[in-house]
Amino acid sequence: MAKRTGFNLLFYSFNLMITLTILCFILFAVVLVLLNGFGHIWNVLQTAEINFALGLSLKTSFISTFLCALAALPMAYCLAGYRLPGRHILNLIIKIPLAMPPIVSGVCLLLVFGTTSLGNILSALGVKLIFTVTGIIVAQFFVNLPYLVVVIKAAIEDVDPRLEFVARTLGCNQFQAFTRVTLPLIKNGLLAGLVITWAKSLGEFGAVLMLAGATRMRTETLPISLYLNLTVGDMDAVMAVAAILIIISIISLFVFELLGKREHSRLTGL
Amino acid sequence: MLKLAGVNKKLAGFHLQDINLEVKPKEFFVILGPTGSGKTVLLECLAGMYRLDSGRIFFAGKEITHCPPESRQIGFVYQDYALFPHLNVRQNILFGLKCRKMPADQRKEKLIRICGLLGINPLLDRFPGTLSGGEQQRVALARALVMEPQMLLLDEPMSALDPRTRENFQRVLRRMQKDTGILTIHVTHDFEEAAFLADRIAVMHRGRLEQTGTPEEIFKRPASLFAARFTGAPNVFTGEVLRYNGHQVIRTGHLRLPVQTGLTGPVGFVLHPEYLELLRTPLDKSNCFPGRVIAVYQKRYFYEVTVKVDQLMLYMPVAGNNSHRSSLPGAGDEVWCRILPGGLHFFPLEDASINL
Image 1: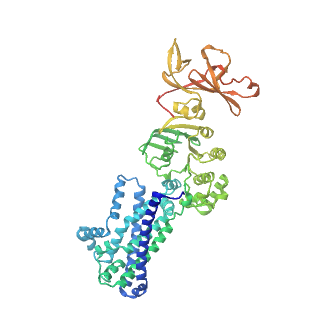
Image 2 (image 1 turned 120 degrees about the horizontal axis):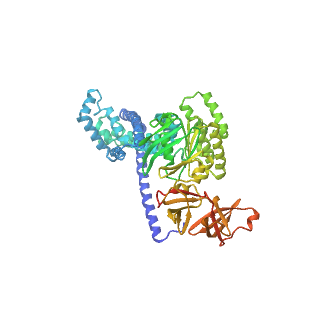
Image 3 (image 1 turned 180 degrees about the vertical axis):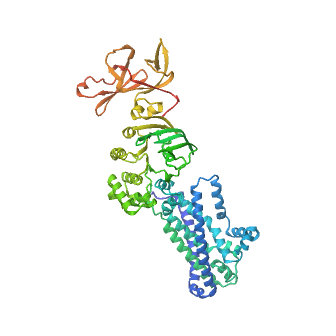
């Protein structure tokens, strides 16, 4: 390219400067927390409270991610493939929770399960959601499900629908065509979506706070623990928990990027 | 036998209209039409991809209108082959047999037979993305044929092949179809290909079947202006049939050709080149017309002479052996054109403003 001069040079430098400044700031902020917290991670993991919070976070996030997968696959398949009347509206409905602050989602869940007959029936059946561990799972599930649906739906839409049709002319029923053709083809997208869903479940704060509360050693996940420790001024614990969450996020991001490289991208034109 | 009765299907921006069709057992049937005429949708309707808006489909004595694709026993080969990209060639071919839970030894036997037939043994461990168009096509055909379907649907399977591969494959396909006797419906926009392969052809235009017949019937006696032009018939014109001095004539430009036809008013017609004779001096006044040679092109075995008679540009072949070379007219020569009896074919004009 020819040498940039005059106004072009100014424009180029301005864009580059803004970009580099913000990226440096992000890196600085993250590294700052990591440096402050890293030394304390081992120590706080010895304490009963953080140990409990880590265990509870892992347990609830795995369960809610698993439940998300169970619900998101059929939903994504249905919204991507079925020629439903008003499917544009259905696609909008699933995105509403994505646009809402999680803490508002939490308020919605609190009202649904706390004040309606649905909540009464569930609690009569022994399913107590408010201020319980089950509530944490439910909050994580509802906040992250739409995200996973959108990711899987995009992956399914990338698959040529004629492939399933050909599978059916070869004798597969709809379920077999899905499991033998579409599912293997969206495998990477699905795994990437699950990793991010899990990371988001682990870090979910607002909705969990609303529905399950912030009770020490009862509904104390890692983000809740961070909040509780901040309120009592235990900065070592805050930094350590923050560092743990950052490390998990970065690892998830790498896995996501790795899986995001489409396995069959070399087959363009198919 | 396959029978379609009043099939209608409306898709976004496209309408398959009132398709009535009968295909005989063991027939190689070609649907000929331009891109966007609805050929692929018709095949997909046959294979069960869409629910019909109306109409019924019968096959081998049963109604299959509401059968799911998996119980129709129809093999389908798409234009771009639609191989499963996550499976290698062997897995692609065996896909259907595994769905059907056929024992492994039987699967192997069938795989060996079909691979021998289509010459794809060296490809078995490769993935579709590494295959050439011709190789992908043979694999797609093997994947369909290994199921021993009752009917084979081919959606422009030749269009992505280079001319030589295409010619080879046409021969292979034709021979295989005759050997196996499987009812085959093949879609193409190429009349030469259709004429080579087909027992019968249906011409499709804007979601309708315009004409059904043998290749010769379609070519010699097109039923519409579209059919005439799309099959590449030379000397296709329009005119008006009327009575003149007590005789039936067709008027086109300043010309009046004596004709015999049941049609009246605006018509289309084909002047078959092999019924045109080029003369230096007029013979029979009523059927001889003066013209001027516009161009002479050398083809492989003959010369193609273009003569302008009134407003009509007539193409006619002239035998090209050496003894005739000196008697060939040159561009600019004044000549006479004689139309031999039987050289005219008429068809009604359904839409005078049609264009291709």
